[in-house]
Image (cartoon, rainbow, N blue to C red):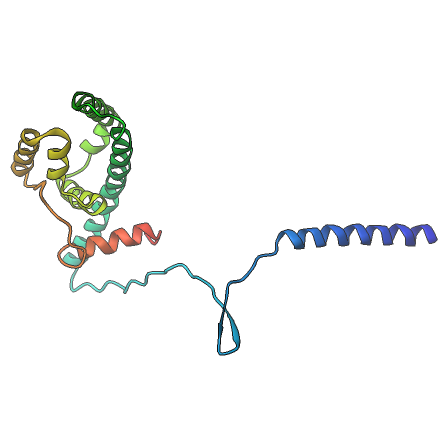
Length: 196
């Protein structure tokens, strides 16, 4: 009987040491602030956006908004890709000092991007392309025209602007999240927060 009690005590001691070690590992400190002799906890919460429920006047307006949401969801990933690829390219360009090397690098990088993304980009509709031009401005802070002009030169920029104008687009399009592009901005925020 004594052996059983000793074994139980040893097991309890072992369990207690494991539990206390786990408890020590999981200790975290809470930030506090003192206001008028009161110590209050400070907890930083992640921002949670609240979107009002969309009310439509008629079916056509609802269909237009649904189509816009679909188009933004198709175009937005490419704007993110453009932002990331441009950052990678700029990081690499800072190490190249000669203009000839820079031009060669830009051309080779452009070819690689065409190989990777051309098929997917060709599947975009005209509406999605127009939205992509706006979203590129949103992500990069420059119009597509200015980006082409900076990396490929004036002639290329004017050429591609002419092509875009033939198809009803404008590479000089800007993005106004508080004005005409408010619905697009709301949809992008819902995508970023994982709501849609």
